[in-house]
Length: 321
Image (cartoon, rainbow, N blue to C red):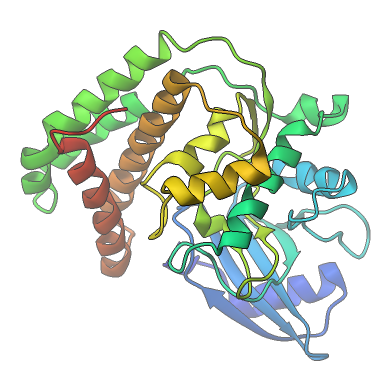
């Protein structure tokens, strides 16, 4: 989220200091991510340490709290997991919000600069390892399972009416509304004929923006807010799509990824469903953000940029799931 949350940052810093027994020297807002219910800060401590604080309206899901530590305990070293509170437990309440604190990883995301050849191989190794970890009964109990019943289409249809009547979005909807409503129909049709496939633990948002690395260094995987038990294509969609990052997959990068992941080819209809369902979900989220009367002009402009990028792709005559 690029707009700050409506919290007293002095109280927030004091809460972090008390909850995690840290001598907080500074709290720096980070305008990152597109989740309208989550915000990020860098926490600087007097001993030179740095931490990544995530603030969520409401509560984190039990899976977001428990799964990262479980995966690290099973050797998935790329996972960035939340650190425990000084008094035990992991998530800390803060008024209408909840807090998780993570180690801070240098280098920034790979959305803009892309992965190196070595990192494409590691990307494959990471996902292969993740998909091979069997969930414990405790973890399986808190992980949602894929149902192919997305609510994105209904959200789009509701928001589309508001967009059409909006002075700011009316011209956009006139240009792209039919194509986006067609996308909702396509997702419903694809969901009706997806094949059965084994479920594995999926990150469910494993695009390059959630991969952190310093230069050609090791990958650090962040944003475990919505993991799911689903076919492996739920994650492989991000690898094989050209929608995510400024340096998407090509034949050479696909070969490097396969070197790490193994010779498994994604099932085409599952890949198509997940690709278009994600586009639909993002469209609905961006429409909601633009129509939010509390959003800043900067936030609305950012949402419109991403919304238009998706709409242009969907409206292209060559668009295919």
